[in-house]
Amino acid sequence: MASKFRLLLENAEQIVVVCTKEEQYLLEDGMQHLAVLEKSSLVIGNDGCIKAVGPAETIRNHFSNASFENIIDCSGKCILPGFVDAHTHPVWAGDRVHEFAMKLAGATYMDIHQAGGGINYTVEHTTAASEEELFCSFKHRLERMLRAGTTLVECKSGYGLKLETELKMLRVIERAHRELDIAVSSTYCGAHSVPKGKSAQEAADDIINNHLPALKQMSLNGEIHVDNIDVFCEKGVFDLESTGRILQAGKAIGLNLNFHGDELNPMNSAEMGAELGAHAVSHLEEVSDKGIAALAKAKCSAVLLPTTAYILRLKQPRARDMLKAGVIVSLGSDFNPNAYCFSMPMVMHLACVNMKMSLKEALAAATINAAYALGRAHTHGSLEVGKQGDVIVINASRWEHVIYQFGGHQELIECVVIKGKIVYKNEKILHL
Ligand SMILES: N=CN[C@@H](CCC(=O)O)C(=O)O
Ligand SMILES: [Zn+2]
Image (cartoon, rainbow, N blue to C red; front, top):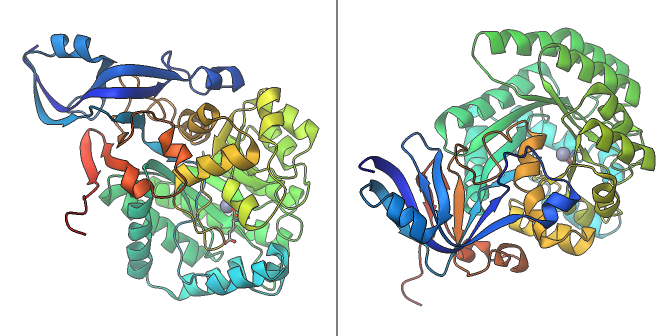
């Protein structure tokens, strides 16, 4: 073959391809049988897609006359798909380090929220920040996610609440989508908190009558592109009825439903998400047995967020019960001013230790299943021919090190590749 390709990754000890039959998600049994190739190579073409993956010897023979823009020797190393982070709130100004101390001293998430802190504090600071300031801090956060191996990330608005600031946030996300390599799934989350002076019903009316028509118009004009709609369905925030109305109106303008449910109180969010055809419901610490069964039946993914349960000392999401019931379990970092974690390797580690997932389950939940939750499983989440060439190379001879090593992944991850382009290379310390 005399053609030219973008990248050859050769002689890896292991390549975790995840699945091999174009599966759009994996259930418990499939997750146990995650596809891992030994002593293998992978080729990415000029269109950024995977052209071949298989035994090093076979690839060498098949591509003996081909040329490559870049070749990475992966001897002694492992290749994995780029991680998919299915839930983040990364556009904001004003950190909440002071609230961390309050929580450690015993204040609950809702104590702080009801006293005007939490999301409301971040809304004030985000409203005051310029679009440029928001973009700069967001870009820096995306770079940190990328260095931790994330190549596709869901990004929510939701610290504006008022239309003008929500649109500012969505424009910032749009700019990242256009200018940066990391892939972004954009979520409108105007129903993240009920604005001061309004009831949940009034806020829902405003969203339905004013926000969503504006989003629709801006999408038609090509100014922004929004994939999903989210609501914080919680006692004291948006009740089930208001949540349902907002989600249905979002669905009517073509958005995927992907919302916060059953986090601090049982709300029957999972049951409603299943009924409305949601792609995903996040959190689910307080989900009911019926809710679990409904998610499984509707093929609605449960996006579990181990950092939230850890930081807020909540009960752990019932990952094992969900897996056993046939739910499509995925993972997200929930990066936000409350849960300041960029790292999917740490998220997977917490999912294994605290939620009792196996290493293979955690990896599948942070790749193919998270891609499914975002409606991107046809392009992301596994290393199959035809999919986008998004990979990470780790400096270890077994892939499990990426979860086993808690923290320090900036040392372990040697490079991150998006569409066959090397977008991050770990610089070695030359002198001590
Ligand atoms: N629970 C609601 N939303 C976020 C927290 C956002 C915040 O506290 O700023 C979450 O997913 O954890
Ligand atoms: Zn969230």
